[in-house]
Image 1 (cartoon, rainbow, N blue to C red):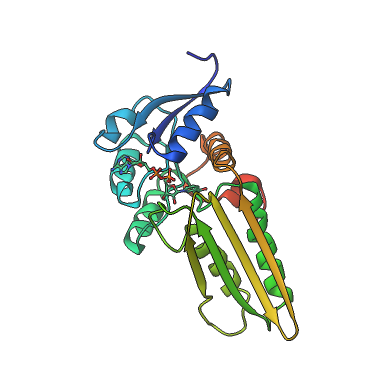
Image 2: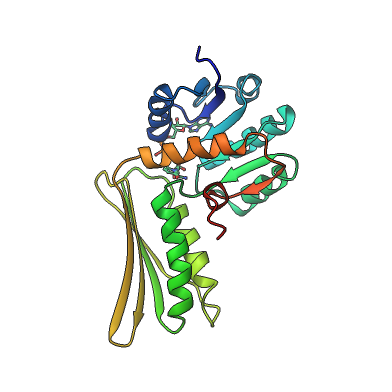
Length: 230
Ligand code: NAD
């Protein structure tokens, strides 16, 4: 056992993100993954000995996670994407009684992309905006949660209330790419982020977990964790 440490319950532990977090946490002196849940494991009992739960599993697991968090009054870091409207409302309800970080993307670079998209959208109000996201073939949801967040940010900068088109490409083993294009008369501006490793998300999720322990109840974003105040 590590000396002074934050105890983490990991949900979705056998998945790509789960395995990356386990590997990364092993190298951290102050973080210990004390419980791992995947398909078929009960979440509530595993939460009893953890300071915080990190979820990278499937959207439908959220009901069980929120029930367990309410029972144990433990903070959550939710990285899973693809939640329905009802599931998002459940997360909001849970965040009224404990601190919850919900982020469609935990990478510092993508969070900079969020901020830059807002700024570019404000400057280029007349330009058309579109988004292209590319991920590996086995990704379950489309469009990606990150693309939806980018669309929401860009939409907030438009004069006319119009949906922002999103194209989703599923090919090879791409970890994640997001491009936002602003097209005007005779010119285009493109902002692109390329994730080269899942470690960037894992590192961000562990940072969010350390940050959220001891915070007042509320729904927080990675922007809050990073102090970007978007
Ligand atoms: P994955 O398919 O490799 O892993 C998901 C894991 O969850 C699997 O091991 C699966 O068995 C497990 N799981 C499914 N149902 C479960 C249940 N009922 N209880 C417990 N475990 C269950 O997927 P992944 O690439 O690791 O991604 C997981 C999620 O995280 C996806 O929603 C993905 O979009 C999201 N994601 C978010 C970020 C971010 O920065 N927020 C980054 C990467 C991936």
